[in-house]
Length: 367
Image (cartoon, rainbow, N blue to C red):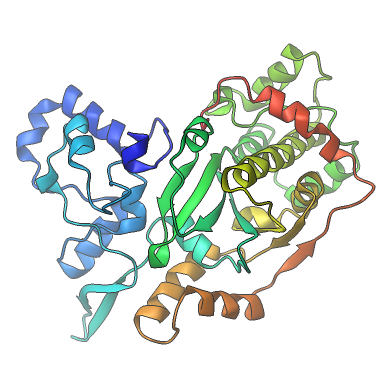
C-alpha cells in the first residue's frame, strides 16, 4: 500500500472507511454512482460538474503516487469501484461556473482543497532548507520536494507524501498538536488562554514530558487524567494545576517537533535552517519560542490564516494575477504579519529531545 500510495497509515484514511462500508453495509453498493470527497461535493453543487481535486485525493491512500490517478489495486482492496471516481484534477484549473442570481457566471477554481495543502502554499518558504509546521488541532510538519520518499526509512517513520501545488510533494508527519490543550481547556473550563500561557511561562521547563502522539491521547474520557497517568507511569512529577498541564503539553510538543524535524532531515540527507509555523497555533508565542529552542533553528510564525490565503493564492494564479506559488509566497512575505523567534542560548529544553525520542517507542497513532 505504501509503495503504491506513499501515504502514511492512519485509521481514518478513506481507503479503510470504504473497506468498512463495503463490508458492513454491502446493500448500499449497488446504489453508488459516484464518490465525492467533501470539497468536491461543494464544487459539484456550485457548478453541476464532478471533480476530484488532486491534493485532497492523495490523502485517501487510494491514488497511485507514480500515475497521479486512482490505483486500481488499492480501490479493489477497499471494495470501491473505479467508475465511482474521475481522474484527479490538479489545483489551478477552472472546473466550472456558478451562475449567481443576477445571471453572471462566476468561475469556480480547483484550489488545493486539502487545508494543509493550501496552508503550505501560503507558507513563505525560502529555499530548500526551510521546513513548515501547520499548527492547529493537528500539527503537520514537513518539507516540499519534487520527488516522493517511499523508501524503508520513510515507511518505518510513517512519513506521508501528500500532493501539493505545481506537482510538488508535501513530505510530512502528522503530530497530534493542540488537540490536547483544547481538551484541557474544555475540561478545566479555562476561558483566558493568554493568562494561562503567561502562568505557564513562569514554570520550569520539562518537569513533565509525555508523547503527544501516543494513541492514548486520541480521545480519552478525561484528557487531564490521561496526561497525569502518563506522567505517573514514567515516574515523573504529576502536573496538577492548569499551568502545569499546559506546560507539559507545550514542552512535549516542542520536543516532539524537534525529534520529527530530525527524522525529516535524516530522511532527505540535509538539515533545516528555519521552520515556518503557520495556522492558528502560530499565535502561541511561548510554544513558538520553545520550538525554536528545542529545534535549535530560527522559527518564523505566520500567517495565521494560511489555509485561506493559500486558497486565494491558487485562484489568483488561475486568473493570471500571479505567475506561480513562489511569486505568491513573496507577496505573503512582504504583506503578512510574521514574527521571528531565535533559539535562546540559555534554554535547556534541547537537552530533553532524547527523552521524548525514548517515549516514542510506545504505540503511536501517527507512527
